[in-house]
Length: 175
Image 1 (tube, rainbow, N blue to C red):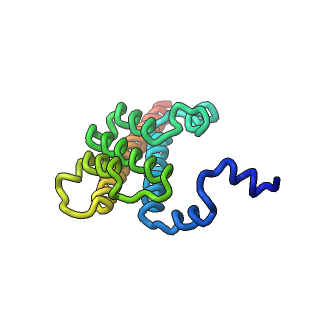
Image 2: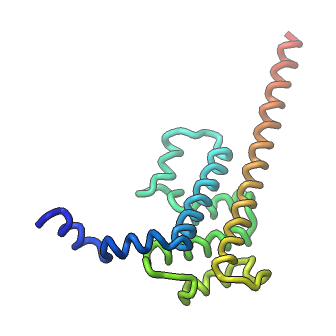
Image 3: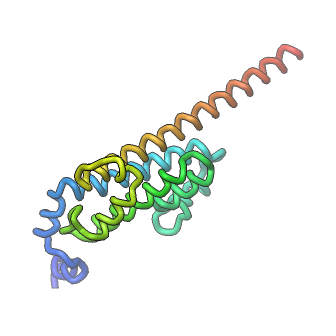
């Protein structure tokens, strides 16, 4: 038995089916959009954490880290006040949609579960467009809210750094 046969025993779809799934641009964009939101959430957390060392980095380990997944990061960022409840809910729904697309190669936005999750997005009430467009609007909204948190935290750190510098200069003048 060659490596192809061993792999075929573990994989439930053929190589041809996989290639077709990779051509589905909506499926690819769903998976990539969640990866990007996860990346931006991690960037925000990197700014928030006082120390960024190996112990903290372990929390992001996909095998056993407490912050390995998008929803875990989103809950922490929400708990710290950087995003609101609506954005947290949208991120959770977006992640559920991503999971449906990641684990089903022939899925579309007509899937009943996907429709349910899209209709739970905060922007769904405002738009009378395709479910995919609603999904992308929600991703964009979440991205903007997370970026606002990043700007807020970067500003806070800059103010603190300036205050420390000024205090140090005042101390030097007194001496």
